[in-house]
Length: 400
Image 1 (spheres, rainbow, N blue to C red):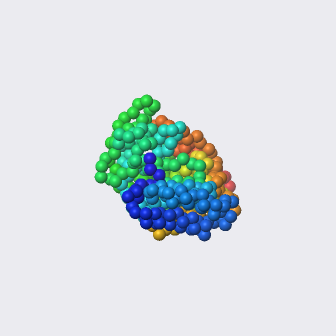
Image 2 (tube, one colour):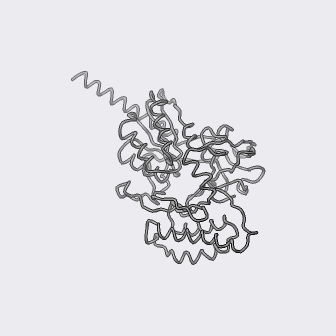
Image 3 (spheres, helix red, strand yellow):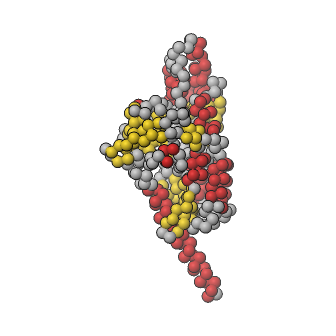
């Protein structure tokens, strides 16, 4: 099991001089956090003392991966979101391409640990795993013949060391060789699935998610925005509204998952504020909706744009920036509290609780999505209410 996104080359065979770049990375991360952190009290922690505690451990690190792990343990002591040191390869090979919607070879799902076992939580719509029949709730038993949790291919999808949430994991792939997985969809009944990784991005998965759902004699548009990192996501939502959802009765806007840019957040909010979408909408959120998506949810509720359904959001709401260090690694550091977006209300460490809280059991769910199903029921109610109001208004006009 690998932490962060990649395993960097071991440094055991390097000369002693190689120790300086490693400890320099630690020192730069400590100093940058001291200088840029949004709270000058360092969240009530003695930042200098933490350096003295962790620096000897960093000096003993034998690999860059180990050094980054130690550095992130120190950063996690501040107990906040958006504070993490990201390896150079992870940032350049995964985050930067996603910002531009550039596809990279992927198996196409994320898993989370529940009671010591790994279960598929999220699938990239139209990705290799989705097309291979893997479903939400499937247990990941083995990867390429190795017990899943012990596999070197199992890679953390990124997490805040200062938050208590268990990390999401994905299966690393170079796109050259197929990956053999043992999957358990029902307890005690496993099957082998061979997946050939294909280039895909979360932007493409968001585009692939666009569909019309028929429910109760109505037509509902559905789109899942994997993140708010790029205006391409706004384009996906806007295009779906004006084209595929043109004759739909309502909209299910699914913002479960990662955060992103306030600019994208405001652009999508504008579609509802200005009446570009003039029919009922239900917002779907969960405990991994974070950052800009949490602000989006708060504003959506504050402005009474529609019902919200799901789970209390992650509580990871700080304005942050990326700072590249001298070795090419990248420090994500929070530089503002972001409460000006929410009329002074603090969401960091708290989250946003939707109007309708829904249970979301994962193990062996067989693809069933309680949040989506409840959202459909709620949207049906909203459409019927709208129709009833329109009928009453017409009747009043006729008798006046």
